[in-house]
Amino acid sequence: MVLVLTGAANWLVVGPWTIAVMKRRHRKERVEGKDYSDPDASSEMKALNSRFAFLHSVSSILNLGWLVTAAAHAAFVAEYGTTRA
Image (tube, rainbow, N blue to C red; front, side, top):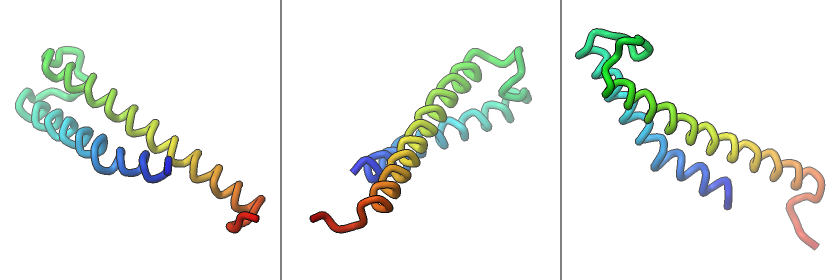
């Protein structure tokens, strides 16, 4: 169940939000003519960077949760098999 929830949350919610913020950030870079990491970036660019970093972190944590759960499930199946007695 955890695999389904973390995968779905990342694929259907967090992923699209992250991509939308990333696209806004790229658009802002083109308009301002500055890189996102430029120290003279506008306050809006800094806010977009902050939001992107947060969403990217959440996405990474969800991916890590999925990976750990999948590994635990694989270890369980390796130890006990797929049938319960």
